Every structure is written in structure tokens, then in C-alpha cells.
Image (tube, rainbow, N blue to C red; front, top):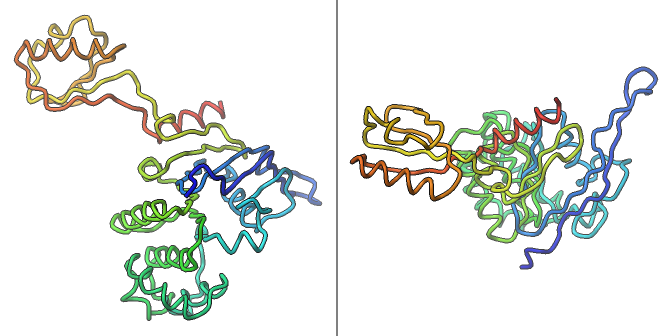
Length: 313
């Protein structure tokens, strides 16, 4: 598997919608976007409501047309029948036919994706079991909870063995156990060389599973990078202690601002590893037992909020 191979490439992509009286008003949903996603990666697409994320996915699937620039999937024009055969899709707020059973949904969508019935029957049980839906697969969809429908939707997106999977809010309405299962499935897909394009508002999950992340707002890319690049160290170090002496301020005098988040921890702003070493030496000389030392990083959520607020300001 060539992990440097591009499976998705976008250049100067733009899309406008018209609305208002006599369709005179124009709204630019996508604004000159450049993007490339490599095979076997988990790619996160982040942005507030109205940022253009779902429009971008629909362009890549051929569900929205009339755009400017270029969009290619597997080197083919986005939305072509050849590229779509190799793609799986779990839409946001999807609606499965509620008069069908879960098993019938798998049969229907598998054959719509070009697979014969025997092949779908071979694949479906393991996928349904993986998402915890096999025992309920003979019940009608209208009897399912939102989380059950979401897990069934994920299974149908994978039934034809796609090479690229678009997951638009895949854990929406799913309980914590179900979310863990979906995260594990995403990792399994990556290990098998499948590329996952993930759109989610749950930034903690994105931070846990994505290799690269793009943050969008108003149709434009504000920043792209690895999770590590988007969550830099803050220059603060947290010390977990068995107990904090009363004279801790004097023990660590000269190290800058000292904060006490709770009764058994403290945070120091440092400028170097040498300062951390010196702080450890002083604490140990004072007889303080240190149970953990953690460099503080900016969370993906805070990085996202700061970036979007700064752009809008």
C-alpha cells in the first residue's frame, strides 16, 4: 500500500448558491479550497455550522454540481460512476427506509453499490455483528432508536468494501459504548488501507483518531495540519503531588506564575526543559513526592474555538 498516494485532490474549488427574491442573492458556500488526502489516512474536517463541510462532501460525491475549480477522487472527476463505486457514505441525519428490516437495508444498499446478492449476504453478518446490530437485524428500521439507525448506517456504508469512506457526524446520537465501537472500526479501516474522511462536531474523538485535520469557516480553510501541529504545547507544566507544602510559593520562587488547579496539583509556566528539571530538584529537596508531570497542550477544541473566533473578529 502506498500511503503517499492521493485518493482525493481538490484545487481552487468554489461553489455558490442562489436565493432570495428572484434568485438574485448569491451565497458562497465553498471559497477557493485546495485539499489533498492520502490513502490509508483518517482525515478530519472541522468547522462550525454553515462552514461548508457537508457541501464539500456532497461535491466530492457528485451530489452537488455546478462548482468552480477541480475535484478528483481516485484521479477521476468527483461524482463519476467509476469513482463512486469505490466510495462509502454515511450522511448526516440520514433516513433509511423505515419499512425495511436492518437485514433488508444491507441487501438493498449493497446491491445498489453494484455487488451481487450472494456477496452482500457474505459480508453483511460480520458487519452487523461488528456494530452490534446482528441480533436486531430482522426488526424494522422504524423500531430502531437513533443510535441503532446510526450504527446500521455505518454498516451499510461499508458493505461493498469501499476504498474511501465519508462519515458525516458518524457518532451523532450514539451512546459511549457505540462511539468506542465506531472509533475502533475507523482504526480497523485505516489498518486495512481504507481512507476515512470524517466530519464531526465531537472534537475529542477527532483528536483521538485523525491523522490530519482541516478547520473550515465560511467556506474557506483556516488551517490544516496534524493533530500535534494544531494542539501545540502551552509552555505550562502540571505537577501532580501527594501533598502540597504550605510554603510551596517560596520553594518555587523565581519560576514565574504559579497556579493551584486543585489541592494536590500545581502548574508552572516554563521556558525550557532545564527549568522543569530545576523545579523537580527543588520539590524533591523539599521532600515533596511527585506522582506525575504533564506538559500542558492546547486541546483541539480550544484551538478550534480560538481560530474561528479570531477569524470572525
